[in-house]
Image (cartoon, rainbow, N blue to C red):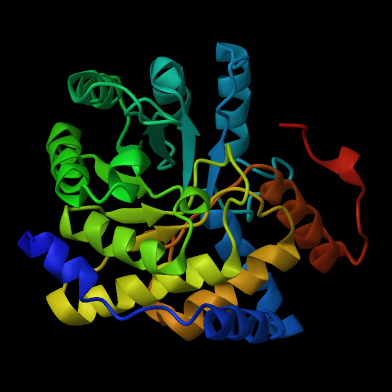
Amino acid sequence: MTELSTLLSGLPGVDRVGADQRAATLATRSIKTTAKAWAIDLAIRMVDLTTLEGADTPGKVRTLCAKARRPEPSDPTCPSVAAICVYPSMVPVAAEALKGSGVHLASVATAFPSGQAPLDIRLDDTRAAVAAGADEIDMVINRGAFLSGDVDRVFDEIVAVKEACGKAHLKVILETGELVTYDNVRRASWLAMKAGADFIKTSTGKISPAATLPVTMLMLEAVRDYREATGRKVGVKPAGGIRTTKDAMKYLVVVNETAGPDWLDPDWFRFGASSLLNDLLMQRQKLTTGHYSGPDYVTVD
């Protein structure tokens, strides 16, 4: 057994029932009205506005970039989102549209969403996205290798992608819906962090289940414990299925109560979501004006 295998097998097991119960309890906590406006703006600043469809066009990407820069064009106090996330082929378009905005440009690489391509192709994919302007790379792990116990291969591949990223930050997608057990989620989180991940991310958003509160809580526990053990801080990004302001508030509570307030920052916590932004904007307007707008108030992504 390798040193990495020994480390991962030595992690404490997860009490699934207890984890589900704790997440459910945290989900019942509310954010008081006085703090809700702050929390909504924070959630907006944490959004990775994403379009990852085969029908993506340069025009759609430019429109999304404009929304990322100014989510509410009529209100200059509304913050920008954290990042735009697109396929590598759309990185040059997004880079031009985001120039000077401060909005990060993320790209899925490494044969997203399956990860089933030779390593050299995945590394070329990563280098090309960075060269075109991406400052964040969202990679997928080889779930087949992980589930078959070949953790060293998964580790080595993450290390190689991290090197290919250069100065770009690396988000490692675990695809937790395919990892079967909570114990595997904990092990995969530690593996990714040991290999150099700057963020660990739940899902591609292409399979179900995607992000869930209990899984995100486990990943937040992992980054908290990893910082305590190593001194290095790693971010967390739930992605897929987070659609409403109410959902986002639950996640922010879980962040605060699990990892702590240090992670309540777009540098350390992100939402991989697009429809979420529209609901956040509508709730923000309601707090400002007292009136709740319909879906036609915001653009259709």
